Length: 487
Ligand code: GLN
Image 1 (cartoon, protein in one colour):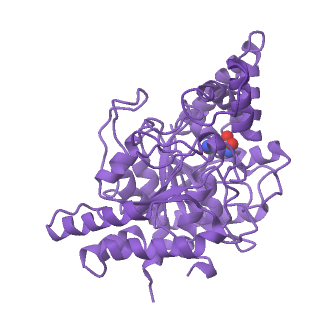
Image 2 (spheres, rainbow, N blue to C red):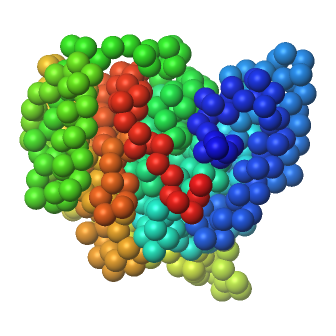
Image 3 (spheres, rainbow, N blue to C red):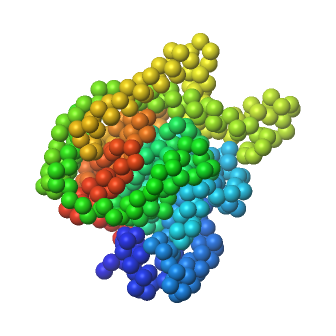
């Protein structure tokens, strides 16, 4: 029997419309699952039971008056990087363990206005720096497919919570892969929209030229429904783009006949697990069956993307994180002897190791004497990476490849080797450097662990990606697989 938590967002919306259940019942069902199972997964930092039930009640009343919108009464969880008024926003850090934001992030307001019910805030790598969720001050998140393994990061809590069916959908942020990589490792669908598509206002900054918010859900259709609510111009975000928001659910059923899919040859290098590669090849056959044509393309600068990213992202984070000084908000050390001591100890005690590593790298590459050799050079290579994509998109409609080189690795396996950890984003990072949209969808299992394929599109062409993913999900059932202990 289909139980509530195995249903997609679209199915839950129908159930609410048909009065099979109320929003209060739905909310209680998922809150109960969080209470029972999140002891294992640790995917939530804060559960907002009271406000959720109050909102669900309001939603049921609106529905009774005939005023329900497509997402009214449906549960969601937000990554704990989005500011939420009167509710703790920790960003996975001791630094912000005591931080209660005085306002909501624009994206949180949009989702709230669309009628969704927030169940809580999800666990994440500290300041979104990581690929395994092991850098969180609140402890690691466990992968629902194998609790000894990582869920990916940095939005690992959001991906694991959907994977374990503790919530039907969630939000995350992606600076170098943090929506797509955990989506792949947890067997869910996750979209990083085009840079500028979703507001960054009230989303705690890591690397401002790369950060972008996006949704996690079970299917491309659900993601399209969510993007309808999240996308749009925001005058409060100077990098938000003033472009009409299409109805992302409209184009899902379009035929793929004649579409050209580019397969970047650089993505099939020696770092890619052979079994993951076989799944990608199988997926390409499905797309061919759907009428698409496959064409090899080259992104010659893409092997440089990790190096460029760790210069650019670290530089930006060293600047963004200078605001945490123990003075205005966040952690403050005990009994400082003077101002310098206050700064030094508040930062030394409030930040974890990975965050400090990034701040030091960033400060170094921006310092006089090194700026030209590192930061400036990285910006130049970033431009080459963008041009590679531009060239590829002259002949193809979208790109397809693996999301991550391997399935989920063991907790602790890469913790002492940051560079090997950084390599898990090898296929996702270039997308951020070029500001393009990227979508990860489940595409098979390797050693009983889910893996994902990544679809990369032209700027603001999320519709093409969602259409292709929707069609693929009509032909396959990888996205319907649920860990046995979560049924
Ligand atoms: N894993 C990458 C990092 O640690 C990307 C993180 C992200 O996308 N927020 O920087």
